[in-house]
Image 1 (cartoon, rainbow, N blue to C red):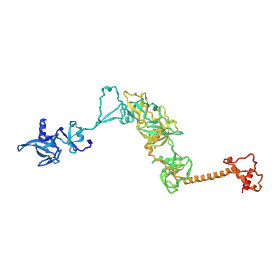
Image 2: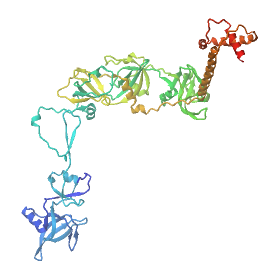
Image 3: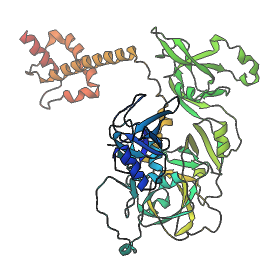
Length: 572
């Protein structure tokens, strides 16, 4: 039977596996072992006396043997909840009886952890057995050569084990280690290792050191990278953008650039409390098809200040989410006090699905480092690197006309260097590049000076979109869909009908030359009609789509059109 560690019963240790038929046998056995009184014992049957009934398995303490009317009886003590009770039992009292050691009954874990009670018999009133042996179950943890997982062997497993220590002295057990495990245990660092396995999958970085991460390459793990945050960056001004992960330790200087917004929803995402947002329209937009009564039109150069998000009653009777903006004049900067009283006719309501083109109005020529910039301004943010990081041999960021700082990512990285080139240090994210390594002996190569860690790493496109799937990005709601325009759909249907009608007319014109053309010289009575018909056909022949259907027979004269109409008349 298996007993859980939370078992509530209490156990009393027995002195041996033997039971006694009477109290006299119990007393004689204790005398032979030179055991002195008092002696603890219990009966497996109920004991009935004139004074009290003792339940079975109830501990008793034999304190003394007294003479009573030429007989001997045992003076026993029964512990009750209120006070001890004295019983006088004759030595001929039948059992069977078990001897137990005096003392308070012990809970399960205490009975198992006492080394003096190892392999002893116990009794427990809660269990149905008279005596039992407590044997704990445990697990042996072992490692196998070149196996990362620990083998767990239960004590109940019946298996033959042979000691091969003497014949296996030459074998050095190597336990593989993941970079994530080295990160979790926190050291000791520096830790010399050797790569055993590189995870499969597309590459993460486009850096030159990524090709050195192969099986057998020796590395030195210097510890946790600081600071723990990175910024995801994409380039602007190129057809194919490039993506980078910039460490918080980047020392280049950045200057803010005006942000570009393509929809009103993008403007709403950039709006922050207490920070005015002013933009300039860079695209003309008429109010046709815009389901917002507070919107007329926008022209290139119109200046707007984004105020807040609200709701408006649409033209179709439905409430729509809008962005409330204030149209600014050229003298708006000189009249800051007048913004508190905004007139309704100066407000523009832009539906969130409204698509146009805006550019942020700003005049900030300060140069920021990455930490100050991300602390003062919300992301995403448009910047230009105006001074490179002098600690990098090659800083690619200043060569781009603009960068978009998309989001800040907090993830632990490990600083790693190649044993063959200790001065070449880089940072590896164990979450996405979890190498399997093994600890090696010896001292790793030390760099000549302070660790120079690469703070800019170019990402592959696949890994960039992996980062975009992080929970921070997934929580961003998608932009609203614009409503379907009934007028546009009706125009498409009407356009389709017009094209169908025009196609039928062209088909009729194409069939006319296929009629038989009997040769007739004159048709004076319908000369007027023939003139009119000629002008219509000529008009159609000016259309290049119809020239292929009108062919001229070189054997016919220039009045073949008269023969066609004469044929019509004869047929009628």
